[in-house]
Length: 92
Image (tube, rainbow, N blue to C red; front, top):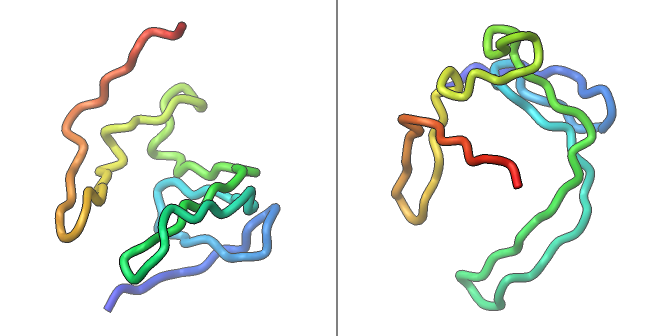
């Protein structure tokens, strides 16, 4: 069993998880119904009000060390992926 510790948020009511490397305080913008039926889902869009980043992930006090996140992403079904490198595109 995972031991989770809760922290009060600053701008919203729900708590955030202390162990999270990055957490977002968001308010609901809208819910978009993608499709109907038993396998259907919704797209939930939120507006970020505040971002919390662990100090050990910050470079120069404002830049995130993306590889330090050790990110796990869900693809579909039982498939997941990890981030091995970060690619940055030029700004338009």
